[in-house]
Image (cartoon, rainbow, N blue to C red; front, side, top):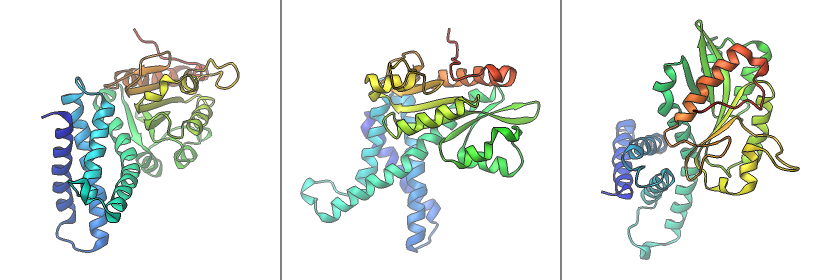
Length: 287
């Protein structure tokens, strides 16, 4: 089967399985809504994780992602013929698009964490979601100096993922990561937040699924700097793009997130050995 058929069949199979498993015979509307949310999250994530190694050599990762979006909408709408289109179906389409927007961003964040976990563990580094960092802070498992204001950064919702390195048994947050399905989403605000943490000598990275907009000079300069008036300085230490972008200075075509893993290693070393020189101009070395 091609990637579209795979994404549709796999999404539907996993959704049905996880939905019934979580619902566990409950019949209330609240239970059904909660189980649907959990099931669609698992269905999107599993389908994406398994489709990439199987189909990314013949279809872009953006196309794979969009095929899963289509499968999600079709499940929400539940029609097979355009003649069935009516007001109720239109409402279902709108509902499906809204639920995708709410769910898909969290799925992509979790994908980035899971896709890099084993490789980063070799360097005593882990990427953690915001909720995981908040839990670690509450459990007293973060050893940054108070001046770093890690609880405030975590509470701000300005970043989706945090990079933590274990140094002699102490967990230290050294990086802040923004995970976006498209470069256009809130990118102006995100760049400002990134600049703030780089000025505090943290590693700032962005991971983007669809890099199509990076072909436009405005967006390229938002990352790399070089603008004559606006965006004269780089906006991130690095931006790692899974699909539809070519490597260019601090923009890295990074389908398997190899550069993200390698740059996290270099950033952790710099942060722990010479943080005062870990400025916004720092850039990882690639051979």
